[in-house]
Amino acid sequence: MGTQVDTLTAANLYQARIKDGIPPELKKTPFRNIRDLLSMHSMTSGGKTFLIYYDNDERAQKLSYAEFNARAHQAANFMVEDLGIRRGDRVATIAYNHADTVLIYFACWVIGAAVAPLNVAEDDRRIAFILRNSQAKVCFVREEYLERAQNIVQGADGDGGVANIEQIIQVGGAPSDRFINFHEALKNRPTTYLADESGAKSADVPMSEGGAATAGLDDEALLVYTSGTTGSPKGVILSQYNLLVDAQGISQWQAITGNQRMMCVLPIHHVNGIVVTIITPLYVGGSTVLNRRFSVSRFWERIVREGVNVVSVVPTLLQFLLEYGERERAQGNTIFGGGVSRRDLSHFRHLICGAGTLSVALAKAFSEMFGVTIIHGYGLSETTCYSCFLPIGLSWSANQRWLLAHDYPSIGCPIEPNEMAIFSADGSGLQLGEGERGEICIRGHNVMQGYFNRPDANAETFKFKWFRSGDEGFFLRDEAGRQFFFISGRIKELINRGGVKFSPFDIEEVLLGIDGVKVGLAVGFKNDYYGEEVGAYVVLEAGARLHEASIIAGCRARMPFEKSPKVVVFGSEIPVTSTGKYQRLKLQDRFAEWEHTQFGR
Image 1 (cartoon, one colour):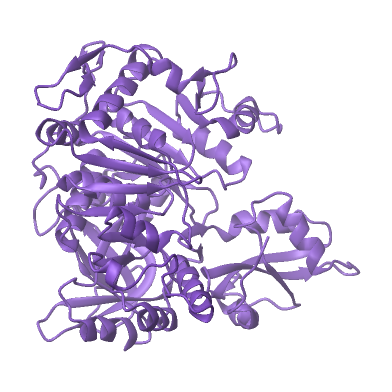
Image 2: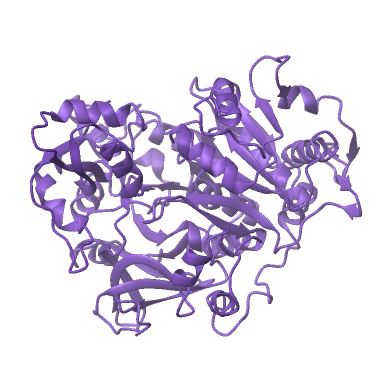
């Protein structure tokens, strides 16, 4: 799978994927692959709604299990017969939340291909790097990004382009002579009836040389890229089994069943949106409501309209909902807006919250205003998605105690597919006890297959047979002896802005390219809206007369708003280690006055 590891690292990585002595080859799920799961629901509950998609204009598209299964197989046939995609190949997407994007993902998984989803908010250099590094053959691109994608692939910015991308496929919009149109290509594709009573059609199983192109559980499903402290993004390899076993663990912990409905307001280029609110409801035969983007004014109303039981959010969205509720209350409306009352939400169970930094203050304010249970959790792309949650069976007072009483909101207890422990932060492999702070480490069946073509990162990450998160934390036990984990900080210096992690090195490369900057350090500082925001600590060259505005403008010219510094602090001294390494985390207090500031574009 492209992990390129030595014998010792391979053995350590294998050990990190064992749970309670059960090796990863002894599968915990009963399905042969994702296609098997989808086809089962299509045959047994073909007429049941699987996916409801809302665009920005409030238009809704509904697909039953049988309809979705048919379209996914049609797309799979198109990939095999027209694009030459085969089992083991990779496909990239430059898209956003849309039913089409979900269909492309599933079409790949039907034939055993993998998806490398890209975030359109990233800068062109990073997108080009990921396209090259992923070795994707084909890139599916939403209509509005076609010109940008073509420039990236052809190397219009002078970086050499992306030679491995053989074709760009247009998704959405009117047919064009320049690109194959995804929707036009699916017209009149062969179909056969499934053996169910719905009358819905499903395309034939796509074939390739040597037989059926359907996948196995160990086939690669996702290649998602995460920032690293070395600067270059690292490709996280997740198998079909990773996705299914984590979804199984999430559904069991959250008590998600086939008669429940989830809602996705998070981007589906990220594992949270993909695993929690698409794969998890699929796993149990439930339904999901996919939103083009999060809308604070429509959030509660849509939960009521569609009978949603559970929504996955990040702390940033809690902050926006809190402010919206305050505005509505000030105007004499209900805090939920849109005429929604608390009684209308009687079916709603709870919010899942993770991915970003949740503060005690935000958890307290949100709980007091809305009285909605927050099931706080934690996980990483490297562990597929979630690894732990607060238990759903806690009373309101117990839930509040674990959220508010220990300086940091607890991220809860490990879910079934994995174990968690605290190890010494020095990387010595010493496991620590209750209350001792160290590095959060995870092992189990939802741990990734490894970093793609990064033997250095794999060796360091798995050197004592657990996955090392880079996050500092500790655990406390309750009266029943359960371990409740907490995040207390970071060992790595990544900046976690609203659940999206940025490498400081990427930002610093841009800072140092500005004439007059002698030293430029990217610093993540506490912020109410995004958990952390991006700041720049700058030491100027002698005689330089740069101002904050010019430095911010220089960064914005080369990076998206999300990644660019919002504040510049000038100084002359920089804390360093004994070996001369910059200590960015010691500069965070220089940005304390902007903790409560929301930065506009």
